[in-house]
Image 1 (cartoon, rainbow, N blue to C red):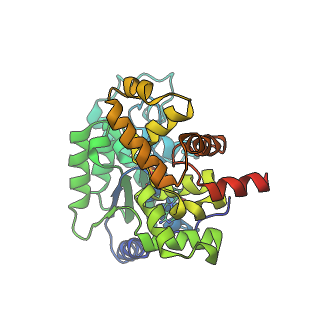
Image 2: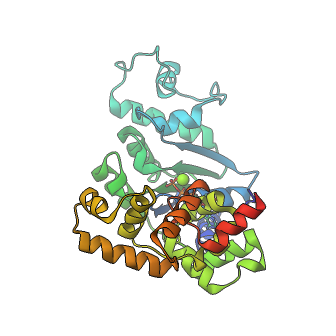
Length: 333
Ligand SMILES: Nc1ncnc2c1ncn2[C@@H]1O[C@H](COP(=O)(O)OP(=O)(O)OP(=O)(O)O)[C@@H](O)[C@H]1O
Ligand SMILES: [Mg+2]
């Protein structure tokens, strides 16, 4: 699929650039905390920022997806690096790298934290660097302590952190505290990414499909279906392809209407649909007549056929194709 350009984040990117220039003119860390729900484009923003400075020293780590372990962030940073020049005890370093054969008991948690900070200090050296902490909400407590600690050092670094809201976190309280501490430093950048605006959705659509996708009603309809969430938008584009351009011409059915349509397509009479859904036959009749009106179908069989043709093309989660689109996809098959 064609790469989608990043839209609507120019202000956020500018703030990061500003933070980076403050790092370069000072002698202490500057923190930038980018929050937002899943798929709002936190990683895309960080990637765009990193692409602008290809020669900068970047230490990047993220949480392990399964079973978080102590110091996951640092272990990810250290993985595959030459650490021989670091002035830290080799056995502690091996433990921080999560070498399974090294016992930890030798060091207290406080000592390990000091050693972890020293390791990062060694990797940063005397130059400016960017420390990227992706998905802080999913990190282990030891990593959270380390990140918070790094924000209070004298290192010339941009500490660039992304996180989903603390409710989604592994340790919500500690995540809230860490985000507050990081965002509370003087000069810190705090950016919450929401969904894209309808006009920004339109911009993405025009980029992918050309001027044919320029109608504001289309942007509005796609925005409503995706809440402007970039991830959901890119999924919709991947699943639907050019059929996205027809979305504003498709009837918008309620969740209940889609349910009724699905059962109707299985050949059920109203009475049975009522039993399955636990509603009255009269209510089913109302849903069916609304369905016929919205879809312009002249009979329940016709409505059922359309539902089935939509399903064959794999678009069950975004509704179903109207007559026009079904005919087109048949002729192009
Ligand atoms: N501003 C944008 N404009 C266009 N597309 C975008 C934008 N931001 C993100 N995308 C696209 O949306 C998808 C999700 O973005 P991304 O992975 O950056 O989200 P995220 O906030 O990091 O999600 P998560 O919390 O799950 O890590 C990607 O395919 C990305 O290319
Ligand atoms: Mg991400």
